[in-house]
Length: 199
Image 1 (cartoon, rainbow, N blue to C red):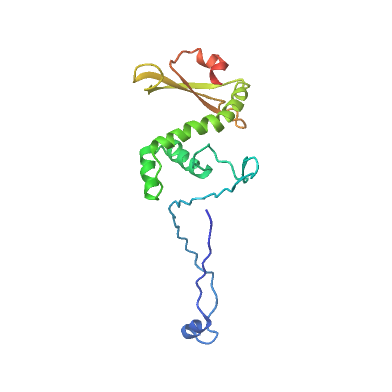
Image 2: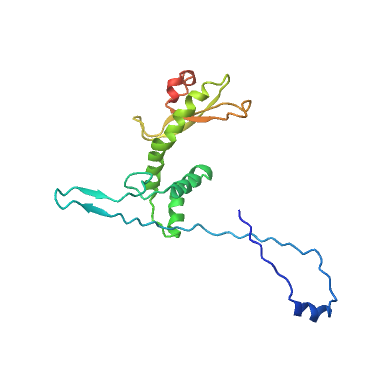
C-alpha cells in the first residue's frame, strides 16, 4: 500500500485576512487519511516478433523474444496469480472469476482457467512439490489428515468417494513449515507410510 501526501495550507493572503498582519501561529497540523481502491486494470502486451528467411536456402529465424509461461497461451504470471488468488485463496468459483474478468473486458472461459491451473501446477509447482517432499520426510514428526472429496473422473463411477490427504511438518518446526496435499482413492493408513505415494 502506497502513501501519497497531499498538503492543504492557507496562503499568506488568506492568513492575513483571517488573523491580521502576523497575528497567527502555526499549530500541529491535522492528519486525515482516506483510503482509495482502484479496480483491477487489464493491459495487453502485443509482441511483434520479426521473422526472417534466408534468400538462398529459405531457412527462417525469429527475433529473440520472451518465452511465455505456457506454449500457445496468453496467460502471464500476473494473470495466473490473479486466478490462483481468486480460486484457491479467496475460494471464488471459476465461473464467478469468468464473469469478473468479463467486466474488465477480458474474455477467459472457466475451462481455460482450469486448464491453465492444471498445466501450471505440472510445469512449475510440481518442481517445488518434488523438492519439498524429501524435506518433509526428514522431520521426526509429520502431521497428517484426510478429507473426503467426490471425484467425477478417475476411472470410477461419477460421485465415488475419494480422499485428499494433507501432510505437514507441524507447528513444532517453526523454521520449516511444509504443507503437501495428496489425492488418494481411499483413506488407507498405508498412504502416509509410503513415501513414494507423495511424489
